[in-house]
Image (cartoon, rainbow, N blue to C red; front, side, top):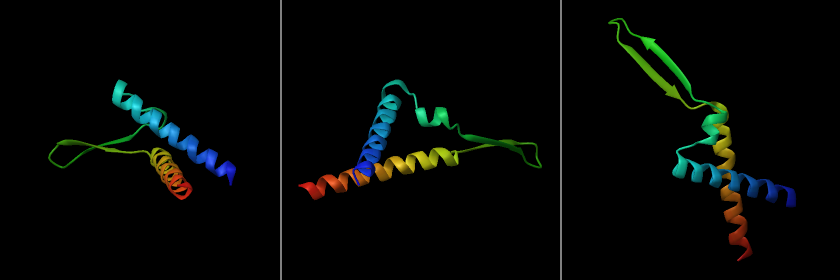
Length: 80
C-alpha cells in the first residue's frame, strides 16, 4: 500500500508542476510530450476546416494525475 501512496504522490507533484509551468511560462509538458492531433478537411464548397483533438495518451496522463490527486486527498482526510 505504501508504494501506491508514493505513486499517487508523484502523480500529484507531476500535475502540480505541469500546471505551474503552464501558468508561469505557458509551457504544458504533457502536451509537449504527447502532442494534440490536428485534422484538416475541405468541404464541398472548398472551405478548409481544422479540428484539434487531445491525444489519448495525454488524456490518460491527465486522468492518472486526477486519480492521484483525489487518492491523496482522500488519504489525508482519513488521517485527520
